[in-house]
Length: 156
Image (cartoon, rainbow, N blue to C red; front, side):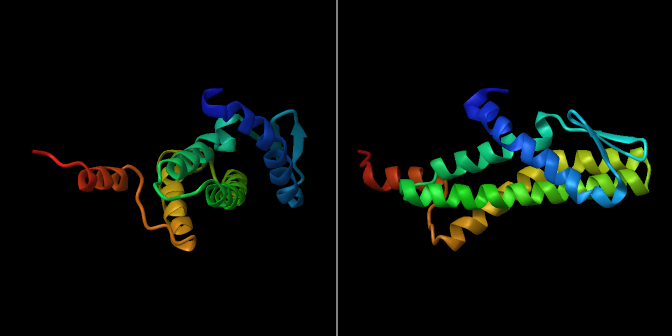
């Protein structure tokens, strides 16, 4: 879990994620014990994957691999993207909790798997595209580098 600083990200984001989720679900009388949120006998355990550290790392990698982003613009892009990721993740947890409370565990597991396997990566890529458009970045990671090299290397 300590790959590329993900352990640090987890330690920074875990407590705010857990307590914001708890407070959002307050109307349902949740009980918080360590990393487990109990709502009417149904439990949600917060583990490292719930924090979505890999989404933050994917965003950082996309920013670092994008040609023509200077350091400070990259920092701005990352922090704005991280804030959006954090808020969307809180909303994801809230939706999953509502599904767990109001429906059965099978729908919860299906939706949870969809969010984890499909939505998360697609969302980060769409977020990166939106951020690059907002910050007027015209290059594409790796592709722009190859294009640049092709134009500047003369083959005989």
